[in-house]
Amino acid sequence: MTVSNSALDEETAIGLLAAYSSRSNAFQTGPCITGRCKGSINQVFRISIGGKDAALRVRHNEQYFQYEKGVFKEVIVAQLLATLERDKQADLDSTILEIWDRTYGSRSCEAIAFPAGADILHYDFTGHAFPGPWAIFGWAGDTLNDRFGPGHAARLGGMVSQLHNLKFKRPCLNLHALHLGGADLIAEWTGEICRRNESTGGAISEERPLCRALELLLDEIGSGPLSFVFCHNDLQCTNVTVNGPSMHILDWDNAQIAPRELDFVKLAHWSAIGEDGYFQPDPAIFSSFCEGYGVREAVIRQSAIFRLAEILWLFRVYEFTVRTASPKPFWPVSRYANLLDERLKGPDGTPAAESGKKPKVKAGLCHRVPSPMGRGTG
Image (cartoon, rainbow, N blue to C red):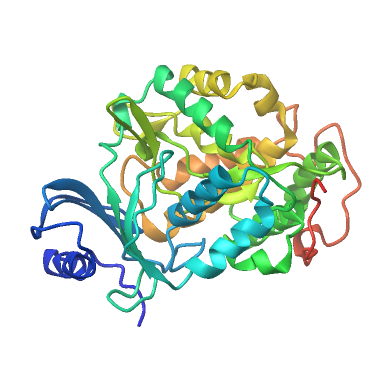
């Protein structure tokens, strides 16, 4: 049975809540739905159950979902943080693998505290009651959206900096691959960029100029070891809430173990929601995020890893928008195409194939098979 891309009706949602209520002794009264929000991948119902506010989240469409299917990664991150609270010397790489193995395909009514996000009251990744993953979270407040400002960004930067204190030896772009022991992340990224460009029929760039642009970045990155952290990979104003004195980060679906620069990319472009209803970059918000994180904005923007991650993200969201025609606040596809055209030019404003520095293009850059082992820190 596949996950439908149509919205859940109220009867189906109530059925999931009833399944939860029957397995939990926490609530004495039945659930009711008080609000709903449907995205292109997930649907969220605001609910009242047992006199308490909560949220039912259901992934109703996995057709174009490019990350781990069948799971919400909040559950993984919350358990990882809880383990580290008990044992600060725990090996992160082996711990997250153990958590993944026992969580994927399972369900639980045991509450899991998650201060960085929303507390998890129940999750079901079995596919029995519903083919996609679903979970019930404690209510963490309304997303900030157009209320998100520099002060919020500075607080968010501090939260993300603390999360990034968790260092991993190896990267992981998909937690299903944890057993493989890591990947060559830079090769994976460049290979994906080339594949996505090819899937557009070369609408963004011809192969040779693209390869040369990537080679410029690879020369800057070099071959030394990289540092890997747990990245949320979807930081923007619609995924941040404030509930009383607490700030929370929602929607960890895109999370990866990767260089820290990955968590700066989206917020550099989707800083705020403008008067026209679309995302817009806001230099003050991005600068405040960097300041709260504890890094100079120029250090991030000049980083070759940031610029490579930015190109990868633009290709991903370009292709996703072509397929799904996402509504506001997401941009029309032409905006991503224009940004990619700008990013693939050399420093003098000409295409990389014609710009001053002409690195020797490595044969088959866009058709490499990535190495199973990555450049780790140890």
